[in-house]
Length: 335
Image 1 (cartoon, rainbow, N blue to C red):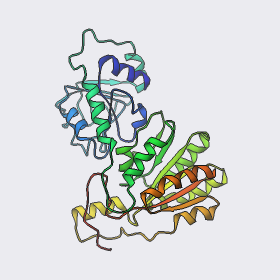
Image 2 (cartoon, rainbow, N blue to C red; image 1 turned 90 degrees about the vertical axis):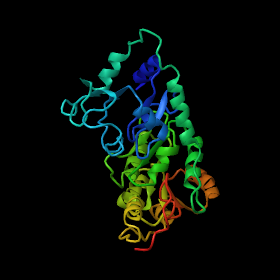
Image 3 (spheres, helix red, strand yellow; image 1 turned 180 degrees about the vertical axis):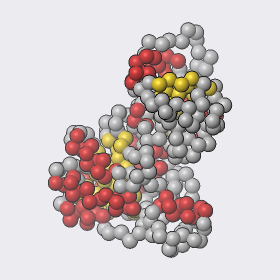
Image 4 (spheres, rainbow, N blue to C red; image 1 turned 30 degrees about the vertical axis):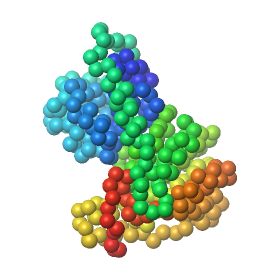
């Protein structure tokens, strides 16, 4: 990844990462333009729409990074696509590239390490503009319904966490705030599924803390997501893996509920959840647990969780209407 960053610097190219691959480049890098995940920044999307050439290294540009296959024309993108991928079966499978290169990302990065532009690049300064757009897009959280402002908590954590902190999550709308506002700085600092798997974050965090006991490890989970594999908190306690789990509780399967509210208003079904007290759940296993209902309660609770030296759960109550980082939906009717 450092080789690709240097290549981008020499050619003054903006660099975007694929869905949940943001830790492949330091978010502070002057050429970083953001990630192509769910709800990408309008500025980044416009840059891709207007690009002459796209260099895709190691990715497939599948459903999530392609905004459900709408970002690039199929089968032949209007941009000249250079696709680098280790699997020959992937090259040309969805998109017909102008140039297909069968190579691993590591081999390709080594090959371009010494490349230099022959002349001054005509697009000089565009990478800096793209990075400025990324910073502006991620800087400030919008106001949400309710007393717990999840976006403000994310921006506080962004400034509070060490740069080598490992952030884990599963699948769900709650992850949108991580993608939008957190900034990753070191390799493997983001552990999250690209397959839509719920329940990934907690067991991933247990392993991460076992592998890197000196690094801060934080797992985010929606209430429904946590209930998939939350029992792995017992493993954290058993092995003294002092991670912090932030359970974002809106008492519903938020992503599914959002789709129901959007596509079938007034006809929601099977998305309400009856949850336990997750703070008491942590204490029952011998960990540290606290309930957080207001934004201002979060920072001191987080500091106490770290200071406890135990695996911890912060049970954060979010308004059910705060269902999306990007859009508001009308209050749901009860299923």
